[in-house]
Length: 560
Image 1 (cartoon, rainbow, N blue to C red):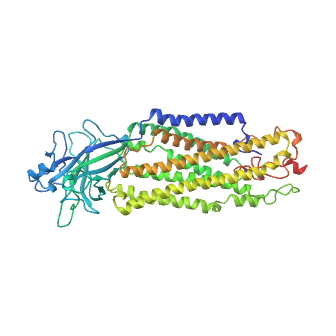
Image 2 (cartoon, rainbow, N blue to C red):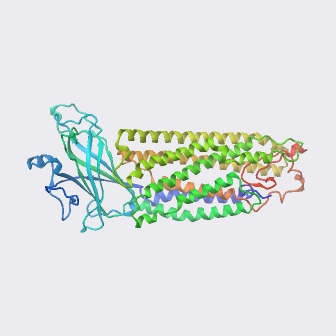
Image 3 (cartoon, rainbow, N blue to C red):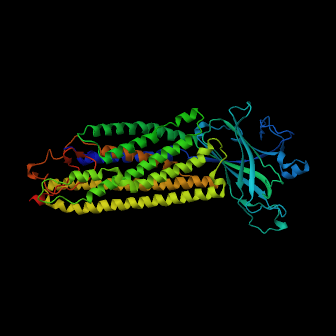
């Protein structure tokens, strides 16, 4: 009977395959470390104070901070008071990018963080729970002479969280508060060359609008976008890896369908893992370079969420199938064939057995999707919306990041426990090995080593995935908190992405049915080895008549 490739392939060939995969893994890290630049770039802007001299507000009027059609500017609010310019007539203008530069679709997204420079005044202090009301508009154009086209307009509120570290005395007037940066805007694509932000702080004392927010001196913005060089490297990796996984997946399933039995659960799950990997690999991002697809960030999150769910579920089922099998009792010594084999196979190959483990993974992924839709889903129509803007939203987002990190660690610990249980049960089955002939004993010792090594590789991939997930969530949170200097090295992103692909490739290759059969070249001295106590190693390859060689380690001593 044919077994799996991990069983029948010679050690020399397996070592060659392992070395090749290891070289590709090293190349994935080196691509990010040596070729790709840092993942993101942060650019700081200081808003220019423009004066709106029109008596009637013109919605289509945009104020440019510099250039041939620049606005009438003032340097300070003292100058505005001297000229009797009201606060409602002051517009803070920010042009992105800086002069003599252009934005590019390769930047993929643009995240903007806002920070107020607020001076301390004894008679104009920041009140507790002060809310800043912001009238903001976003426009774009693709050359320096065209009119600006409005992209979005909104009235937003941001809660000020400022501290004054000095004593609140007249001597300290003019010193600045220490204010936390505020989430301001996120755009899912950068399809245009130039962007213009016009920000107003309307004042209405009767309605308590922008009252008690202190004396605002300046507005600073930090724009964060993905580096174009990193985007090109990322797209190139996706383009290269997509056909590789697709080809091995088709080859794997073709071998499965050639078997004279229906696929078992683990074989189906391996196929699903390959499909999810292909789904996340398909480089649809190439279209974002030519089209203004603002939903690409949300779509990317959905794809990654599906892959996370499939990968975590696969590891549970992968370990669980083997663990369940090793818990089965060996056949009685006087019975030539196990009578409970079919019943055990049916019990193991049911997906419903794993609902307690897979259910929380699916539920967590669904919560991830809802959380993402609550922010990036709304940002499709209003890029100035942020779940971090309110106290409830901030607490919810912080709680989500903390709980997600804790759950990821608990998942990894549970997976380690399952692998430990599998290893312990395998060690218990090794008592049958000394009774075998030397050739057969060496064969099964080799199988045990291969399987244990694969399980350790699985644990390593799981650990790296959990670390990557936690760092990604914390890094994105730091962007919203204003810690724009927090960056993850490009090599980490490309290395983890390459690791996922290589792991899925290796699983489909090693667990595909082999055309070779162990035992064809065995001597007649091991006759009767196929009767006696059965000890199975893996749970993927079974024949219509029962377990194949990859399933069984026969205790010859029992027959003797």
